[in-house]
Image: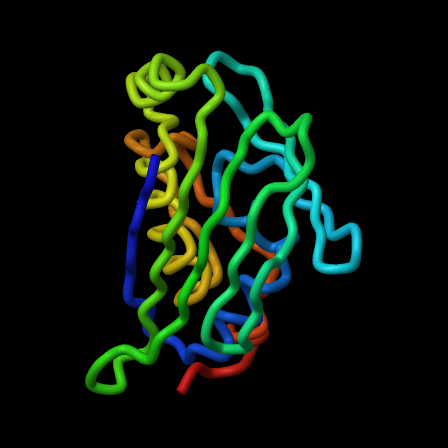
Length: 175
């Protein structure tokens, strides 16, 4: 299965790339991720929520990294719960309006097509998740927090996240 999603974020490409490239930041805006651990050598270990309350795990390696342009990856190992690969592109937005982030991903869902349909019915299909994740990334980068509501998968309240380097510190004015 293939998914392509994009969003425009009003921030410099360099800062968004740096934030994303630190893979341990990803669970801060990717609701389905429980943990990403950098294990060195361009490799990382991922743990995500699965439909029905379980979890899936896999290892991944960076296959291409062009600073401020793109990060490509693929899952590795024969025992992976989720086979996936993809690329995230970081492009200057037209009219000096920040950056366009484009995520292209291919994945083989656990349980094949039936597993994919089940996940979609539960709102946990990767295409839906990536849309939601990119909206939360935009909130984190532009405001430093993710605002939650009754309609969001995370429930009510505000999730104030650790200060993002692009955000002014307490007492600083934003230009």
